[in-house]
Image 1: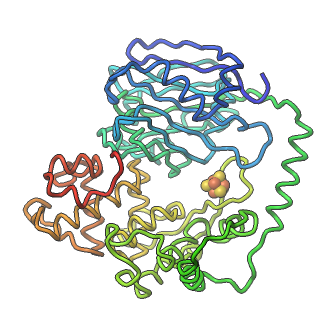
Image 2 (image 1 turned 90 degrees about the vertical axis):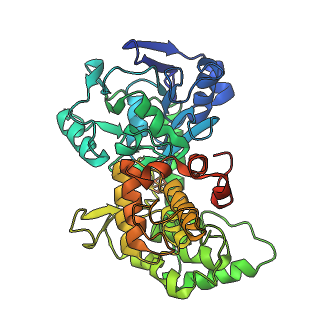
Image 3 (image 1 turned 30 degrees about the vertical axis):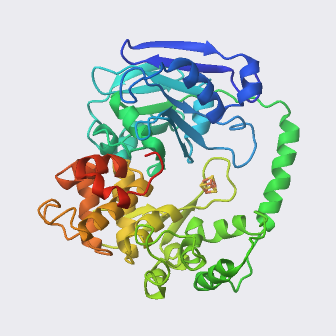
Length: 461
Ligand code: SF4
């Protein structure tokens, strides 16, 4: 096969059995690979009415159609499952270096069903496919687990490792799957499905060549694209402090002009990563503020100036790209000491995380956002849903649906950084009030009461 491998691996964790299956070319013609292949497989394998956290649900790790062929910006992978959060289709997408490793093992996707009796992890290397005991890493955070497994299985090649953290082990419906020490396939509750199967990690360490139909042509296309990306630059005078003004102008426009990604998105991603939308989103009216009830009048300059992307990039001491990406919006940032030096560094925050723990909660403390990101990445919890759930809890508290007795003494008020951070810790460990909130807003409404539904921002869970 060229481009795709034409094979998937099925693993039944209840039986401990493995089965390789050839996928006909027509399936790729109709569904491509990636999420499309995931849809095809899951639709044909998950029985109607299956419990998302039961043995019949299937969780797939799928690579992309062009991943590994020499094409650029095609290095992402997808987790697919029946979502325990919504009861419907679930997928989550992630960068890093895990996607090509799936194909280098000879598969376009690896699919799990069943439930293991004890915590295990999957290892695929040049010696074969094994299910290994995960007792040594169960209960450990995602970064520690990844370090441990990478070290243990490092041979000629560094293994690619995807892991779950405490949130997924405790079946939080807003948990995800991490790789590259902090990139996370976060959405749809796919982490909880992995946790329900007692699958701690997938370790991939094979080095098969991924074929390409026309390598020369691909090389030439990629070269053209790389040249264009290299040429895209922002005017030197444009600073992060000017973005709110641009947002204000955009907010006043009656129609939105179509923007060329090469001219706008790519150079801004190269310069700032996607936190470039932070303050611009506030002033354009695009960013959700105060649990979607506020505006730039509430979260004004005195707040949003603290999320200026220049302040974020100033902390960046190392930049990186996902596999085959030449844009390179990723970065590792220094965290200043706000929690007894527990964490020294974290990934550069994404726009969504800045929003969830910034304007949505009326929080202006950038330091706390860095710290919370690292907490969430290590626990493997979705920062979008986590912030959204904290915003809901604050509105419940403000409207007397939760009291200090319910919150274990936490003063859940807007912008109360300390309380927000402690609440996140409780959600990760399912301690006290955290247990009510650990599964996102829809589940929380069922626990706190229907009067709280008006503060729960979600569509279908
Ligand atoms: S480095 Fe940034 S732009 Fe490139 S694939 Fe990763 S997330 Fe996307």
